[in-house]
Image (cartoon, rainbow, N blue to C red; front, side, top):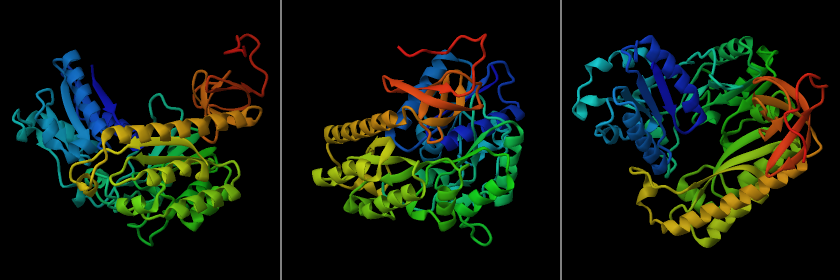
Amino acid sequence: MGVDVVSFGCRLNTYEAEVMKREALAAGLGEDGAGAIVFNTCAVTAEAVRQARQQIRRARRDNPHARIVVTGCAAQTEPGRFAEMSEVDAVIGNDDKLAAASYRALPDFGVATEEKIRVNDIMSVTETAGHMVDAIEGRARAIVQVQNGCDHRCTFCIIPFGRGNSRSVPMGAAVDQVKRLIAGGYNEIVLSGVDMTSWGADLPGQPRLGNLVQAILRHVPDLKRLRLSSIDSIEADPALIEAIGSEKRLMPHLHLSLQAGDNMILKRMKRRHSRDDAIRFCADMRAARPDIVYGADIIAGFPTETDAMFENSLKLVEECGLIHLHVFPFSPREGTPAARMPQLPRPIVKKRATRLREAGEAAHAAHLARLVGTAQSVLVERDGVGRCEDFTLCRIDTGLAGEIIDATIAWQRHGQLFAQAVQPRDAHREPAFEEN
């Protein structure tokens, strides 16, 4: 059976899953014939934790003899909750999950709840290594982790206690990793981190994320597409803003950590930006890069949120021009200040989340309509499916995973774009789809 890694949550977990599998196999985990399943958990919401526990139980029913190991952010913040599950053999910390020695030590774990746990003090971790991954299985783009952890303490967020304080991969190591991946055939690289715009603050000279982006583009001329994962707009430095506006190889898509559109709620969240800061940033970047598209994280139903406060968040979809919306119904996380604030009734929270999603879906539909008839450069993700430079998903009538195809958006149907390659197709190959 070998080793299977089941990941929940963010892009960083997806990346780390590759390292975990490599290290677990190097340690000999799963060689006993029964195999092993490693769950890389997420702690962002209570629902993410519930889903992980549910899948662990299902995995044990389906694989009665396999070793089940739980790690990730939820395992770091709630190790006892997983260790008390009879289905779980071991719980290891978020930092230890990336080392072969952690998996080699599994035979030493006991059966009692406290004996299953190997979780260190994540706040004691001061460095992050550039864990080199030569391939991300089944993915057309490669993810490069350049930062981990977070120094901020937003009142709703448990992640700093799962990831530790902010720490950066040195610039040279990050550039070398991108070079390796491009030499391995990748056309698109995604820079990822927990609080990526804080990159460099712990490095000598305190470089900023913009310095790293410009260094990668300068030193890796064969890189065709560079993409950023989520950023905090208030921390965007001048070099990053310059790169977004001028570097065509830096993709025109930013996913913003906005969380709310009301100043009082932002203050109670301990966010570092105001409503006007978010709107101004989006307007300024669109002026510099007219084709830019924004995604955003927004929380619905934060404690004390009134109808008027919620309307301010709802209006942010239009005022910032948000297209790809990630909506989170507020989920109190034990140990955070927001969990102790006056909570809203769950039906109100769910209703507000629904309204936000509907606004996001309407904005996304309008965006798709605008793209019909435009020329696009499409990265093929798998047979028949690709992404435009602005991260919009489309069907594509040719190309292999990882190829970049010049195409025209021919039409849309049922919320999907359909792209046709500009170059003549193979005469011996049947069209992937036709317009009805």
